[in-house]
Length: 290
Image (cartoon, rainbow, N blue to C red; front, side, top):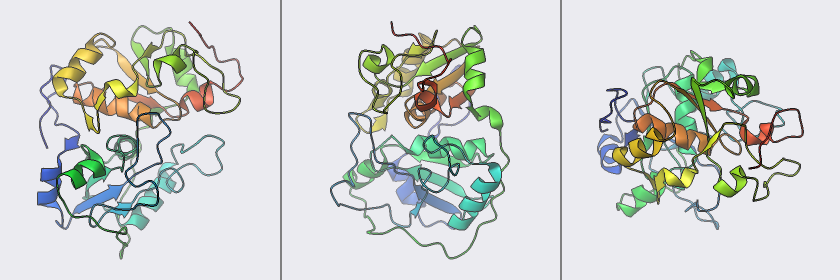
């Protein structure tokens, strides 16, 4: 775990390295979670595709795409209630004092959302494995061919901070608020309405006054870019005193931007949960295509 040198905050990085995890793995309060979701964004590739499977030894499955999510929602993997989140993570065996490390099988793609979900439920001892499973394997670490089974329910207690995820009403009110910046993680082509949206019936374009920061700009191959690179990226887009709301296609890569902003030192952060999957639906929500 490394400190993030920043003018914004002295809090530690949200990232841990493969070496750090390899040294700590097996400690009683350490819980490793695989939060992989099949990637749909061009440029992100799962090493567990094509019938392959491997996992960090001892890793448990944290499936926010199908299990730890709002039931019966028309939108994908929406945040569940605090009660449901608590129930699900207790079933996984997570305790109030658990030190959680999340990873995914792409590198840095799906795991930041799991990290932000736990933070939004009041758990601060949660970190992202930089480089994920690809970095773990590349470093020559051993892998398991199945997820670990949990033998005991945990005693995790959710203490929700509703400001860490927001809905379309919050975003709508923020469009003309100079104290808030909205960053969109989708490609520049989708942001400008030059590329079709992958979801049927979803409009093209972006929110008025939003800025574009394609997710690939904050990730170098499978790892988060350096603090200096991230500070340089964000300083031209977000003022120190602004609240930052991130958005994307469905709320996954928005969390990659949130993680990158965290590493750059920003702390007044929120993720638009519905993202473009909701905003782009035919509605009265304003869209710009230039």
